[in-house]
Length: 397
Image 1 (cartoon, rainbow, N blue to C red):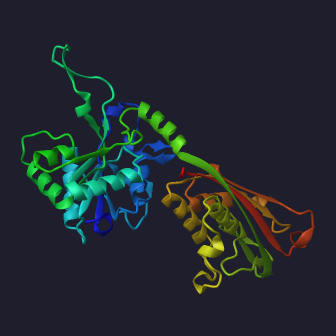
Image 2 (tube, rainbow, N blue to C red):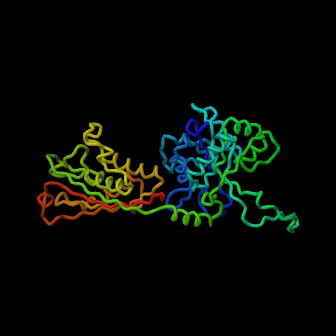
Image 3 (spheres, rainbow, N blue to C red):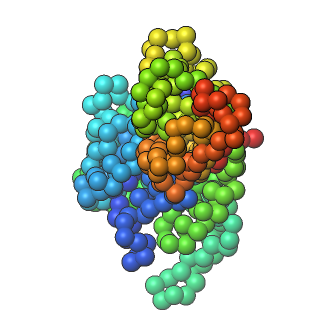
C-alpha cells in the first residue's frame, strides 16, 4: 500500500486546560497567540496544508466552544470539532469513535497535540509511511544528555544507556482499525497510559520510531511562547507586493471604493463593481505571494463576476495566503483622484477593508492624493489607485 491510496485523518487533541501554564494566562495555551495567530490555528493549518491529509478533526473542551469559534477557520478538510473527555485518553477515544462512523472511515489516523504548532510536512509524511508499513509510528528525539535513574530518596540509582532512550513527540500515527480496537480495550484497563503509542504497545501493536524534529516542540510553560516566537521568526520571511489599477467614470450616482459606496455624479466603469481600491489591494496581495493577478483568478470574460462585489476578490487572496500558512501584516492603499473627496470616507474604508481581510484596523492605511489637475485623473475622467501589501510566509527552500 502507498500513501496515495490511503484515506488519512488527523485528530488534534485540544481539550486540555493548560494547567502547567500556571496563572500567567487568561485562556488555555492552545488559544493564545504566537505572532498574532493562535497556537491551535497554526497547528490546524499545518495539517490542512498537507497534501497527504484528507480530514482534520479537532477535539475540544465544551468550555472552549466560543474560543474555537473565534478562530474562524473554514476549509473543506476541517471537520466540525467534537467534545473531549476528562482526560487526554478519553478525548482521543472520542475522536476515534467519531471517525469510525464517518462517511469514509480512515485507513490511517494521526493523533497530534494541539500545543505542537510547528509540525513539518516531512514529519507528517514519514509518520504515515511508517504506519502503513509497520502498523504504528511516532517521531522521537534521541536523548543527548546522560540519563540517570533516581530513587525516591533523591539519590542516583544507576546510569541508563541513553542510546536506547528517546523523547516521544506527535503526531503518533496508526492504522485506524488497530488503534481504535486498542483504545476501546484500554477503556477497561487498570494501566495508566501517557500517550497513544503506549496504548498501542500494550495492545501488541508494532510502533516504528522515526526521526523527530527539534522544532516540533510542545508549548507547555510560559517560556515556551518566547521560544515559539523565536522559532517562527526563523521560519518566516517578509514579502512586499505592489498593485496599481485604473477605472474610468461612466454615468451613475455613486462610486464603490474600499468596499463602501460614496455618492458622486458618476460611477466607475468595470466588469465587476469596479472597486479600484479593492482591486489594487488584491493584486498587491497576489503579487506578494507570486500568485498571478486578479485577472487570472477572476477573468473579466466570465459572466460569473459581472457586477460582483470586489470583496470576493480580496477574500480569495487572503484565503490563499492563509492556506500557505502566511500572515497579512499591513495594507497601504493610495487613491488618486480629484473627485469625489476621499478624506471624509477613509476611516469607513479602513474599517471595511480590515473586516474583509480579517485584520485589525491598525494594519490598514487608506489615503488619497491628486495629480494637481494633470492627466486623466486631473480631468476627472476616472480614479487610479496604488497599493503596497506586506505579508509573512513560511520560508521555502
